[in-house]
Image (cartoon, rainbow, N blue to C red; front, top):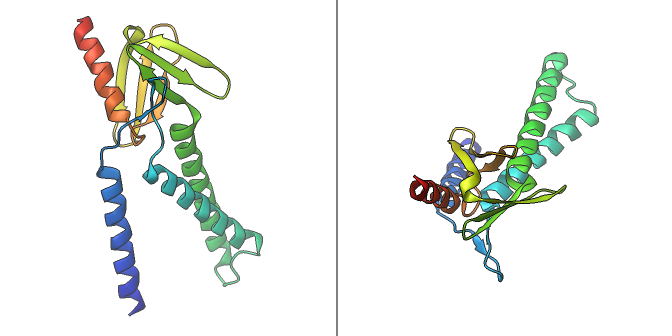
Length: 170
């Protein structure tokens, strides 16, 4: 009975995740007219989930690891799991939270913890979207490329805005 309950829970959580991910979410409109890309519930839950798994596996390893006869193999697997979940948490955090992107009219504002840069949409050379990674990249003439998650609220709006600006440009 517990296996069936676990399967039902897993199917339900996957269904809810797919529903949340499939909903188109709009960018937040600030009082001064800027459209701001923000992480949605899917990215928040993914980051919390990866950090929870990282904490669980870290706790298991700090409390002595496995005591079974094949403990060496199991502990090696735990190290790989810790490294994998650590990398996933870092990647999600970096792609979703590091660069704050907003736009108003034809001005694109990129804000990192170190600096704020504004570009005109005409300065964009290329826009690339990597669906398998959930990542988009904006390449500029005179600036380093900017990476952001395609799961951010308003990412599809920004993509459409960039494509419209380049269609008008020629």
